[in-house]
Amino acid sequence: MCRNIHQLHNFEPPATRDEIHAAALQYVRKVAGSTRPSQANQAAFDQAVATITAATAALLDELTTAAPPKNREVEAAKARARAEKRYAS
Image 1 (cartoon, one colour):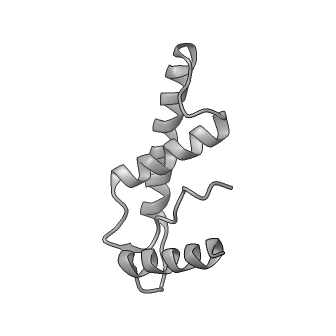
Image 2 (cartoon, rainbow, N blue to C red; image 1 turned 60 degrees about the vertical axis):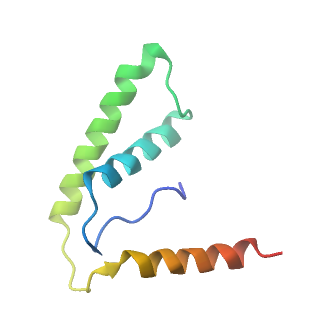
């Protein structure tokens, strides 16, 4: 759905509150269809971001896996390689 929302589960170190908030903000922006809400919608927008941030944090706290944690640098390098291949001319 939204390429800017990245997987947050099973990384070492775990996702930070800022990363979770950024993902929630991207999700709300995508659903709302705007990056900045009007003044009339600002409170609803902010409440949605806060609710989704809390729900995402709760989800990440509850998820379990037997897989070893992923390394952020290795995953970022893989993503760059995929992007280079995708956008190569």
